[in-house]
Amino acid sequence: MNEAILAGIAFLGALIFGVTGFGSALVTIPLATQLVPLKFALALFAVVDLCCAFSVGLENPRNAVKGEWTRLVPMIAVGTALGITVLVNLPRAAGMLLLGAFIVSYALYSLLRRAPLRVIDPRWAWLAGLCGGITSTLFGAGGPPYAIYLSQRGLTKEQFRATMGLAAMCSISIRVTVFFMTGMLLVPAVWMAALFAVPAALAALFIAKHFVHRISREAVLRAVAVILLLSGSALVLRAMHA
Image (cartoon, rainbow, N blue to C red; front, side, top):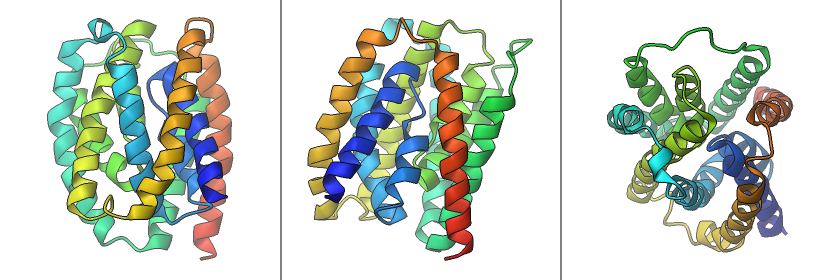
C-alpha cells in the first residue's frame, strides 16, 4: 500500500518539477514523511529526483545559461558535504521541525514576494549554491535557493527551467553519491519503493512536457506555495508533539 501512495506522491512532485524545473521535493518529502522516516524519504526521492533532473536537464540544454550553473556547482558540492555532516547526527524530531520551518518560510516567501525590480549580482550564486547543497541533503530540497537566485537574474522562462534542470542534475548527483557512501541508498526497501515511484514520476514528466508552454509558472508556484504552507505547518506541529 505504501508503495502505491509513494508512487502517487512521486507523480505529483514530478508534475511540478516538469513545469517549473524545481520544487518537487518541497511536496514529496513532507507528504512522504507522513508514511516513512525522513531518511527513507530523502533516499527514495533522491533516486526519483535524479531521474527527473536528467530528463528535464537534457531536454533542451542549449537554453541553459552556462555561466549561471557553473557558478552554482562548486558551492553545491561544499554545501552537500556540510549538510550530510549535520544529517548523520540530527535527531528525527529536530530534522522534522527544521524541514517544516524551512518549507513554511519558502511558502511565505513565494506567496508574498513581488516581481524583481533589478537583476542581482552574479556573486550571489555562491551563497545560493552553498545553501542549496545544505538544504538538498538535509531536506531533499536544494531547488529553492537556486530558484530564488535565478529568478532575480533576468532569465527567460525557458532559460530559467533549463538552467534549473542542469543545476538540479549536479546537485542531486552529488546527493545520491553521498547517500550511497553513508549507506542510505543501500537499503533494499528504498529500491523496492523506487520501482513504483520512478515510472510514476516519468509519466508525470511526459504529461508536463506537453503542457509546460500553456501553464503560467507563477500560477503553479502560487498554488504549490499554499500546499507547502499547509504541509510544512503540519510537520512543525508533528515535530513539536513528537
